[in-house]
Image (tube, rainbow, N blue to C red; front, side):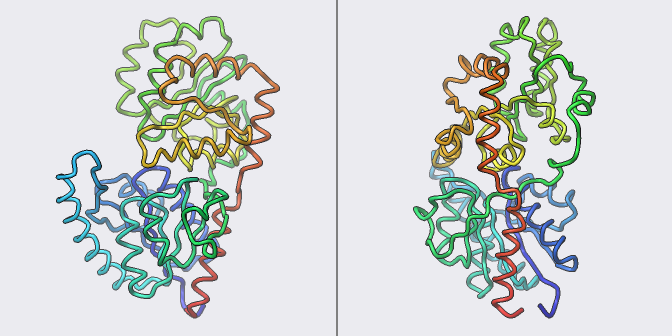
Amino acid sequence: MKQPMRVIISGGGTGGHIFPAISIANAIKLRYPDAAILFVGAEDRMEMTRVPKAGYDIVGLPVAGFNRKELFKNIAVVKKLITSLFKANSVVKKFNPDIAIGVGGYASGPLLKVASRRGIPTLIQEQNSYAGVTNKLLAKKASKICVAYEGMEAFFPKDKIVLTGNPCRQDLLSDVSKEEAYRFFKLDPMKRTILVLGGSLGARTLNQSIMRNLSLLDNSGVQILWQCGERYQYDLTIEMSDKPQAKDIHLYDFINRMDLAYKAADIVVSRAGAGSISELSILGKPTILVPSPNVAEDHQTKNAMALVDKNAAIMIKDEDATSKLLGSALQIVKDDSMLAMLAKNIKTMAHPNAADHIVDEIEKLVNKEGK
């Protein structure tokens, strides 16, 4: 490569898209310190703040998702898409990347569409076991498609697919002890710990599943480390203020030290986003998955079933969570043989070097173009 690599990356909308995109960027920088990397995101989404915090520049597009319930509102969406295509074209022309990478999110469509039209190699990273609409539309023109699950030939051309896994935040692999984790969160070292994660925004169903069944914690010898989401924290704090079980609840709107949270957990309750599953797999954490019903193509259920079919996780449907979730978690967290089996099986699905494998593919595409 005669000049520093220039890479443009689009990925955002949710933490599940942002963290893999940043992980890929970090892996590129590790191998090519002089590489120039630019992110492209959706103007009103969280990537516009998360990406700069990670040390990268980002340009926003006014793109938005289609409204499937109120179709008339899509007139504005189409206008935003057209504007985004023009802006993406301007950004790509000015930045002149060697490769364009899309990891999902609203902005990936316009960016990769423009890049492929300009003859720039494009790489798609599909995180889920059921491909998203945007990636399926982009696949025909994509140079390479990196996937996290087997059987993706149902969605993409077989000759373009490479099984790499999903990149994860490397800070999760920090060398911390369980004792340190317990001290950080002020947990009782004599009690087992259930970690409840509703994603970066929280999950109403998971929150209700705990609040409506607090009495199950009585004399259980179990404590809960709980990321509830900023929008829910105040009401939950007030609601628990007079509950005796509050002593076994450690409530946070958002947990920044996830390495310590995972280390403290004997079992994790989580939504079934692709990023979360990849983290749980790499760390070998026994897990109960509650797929969100509010996602396209019900892809979280499909993600969860990929683990359930290999006895690598327990799945509880969102509609059953309020009546079953906490009781099941309390039962499993005390079952050493079940915990050991889940930990062993989920670990077999891990791809700890996913980001490096994706950079391998990026390298091949860029070198193939002779840049």
